[in-house]
Image (tube, rainbow, N blue to C red; front, side, top):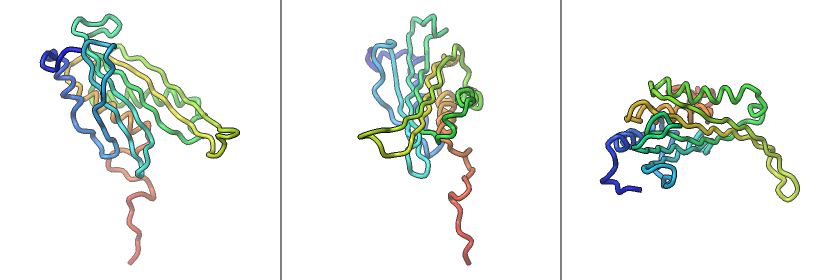
Length: 190
């Protein structure tokens, strides 16, 4: 990997966009070590999503840059994500969940006008039931979103915001400014 002073301007602009603050307090972003062998330049973020103080989803967003371009990317900058979230057991059995989860990504990007090309990915839903020495908690269900896309501009701020919107949807957070019933409400006592 090249030294930071030798970073290409397109990569530096994209990194600056990803360093924008998270749009909501429930999403905690942190810079992490980026993979070194995928592209000449890389930058990575991790996210933790909290709901009522509990971690309910997490993910990574990796920015890759190859100044020479990459045919499969249809460009020279690529964003790659992995998002995981715990689900309620009844949601894990929903046959429409993969399509809905994919729209959380595409709608999040569209909502923030994050223009892209060459998008692709997989949605995996799993359930786990423990037996024997591991028996105990009830069955768990998880959702995993793996995706990548090529931004059509160097400024990645809109892509960060779209990714955070997808994280919020995956974690079951209500839209900003909306409280779920029973949360953040004062008791009506005189």
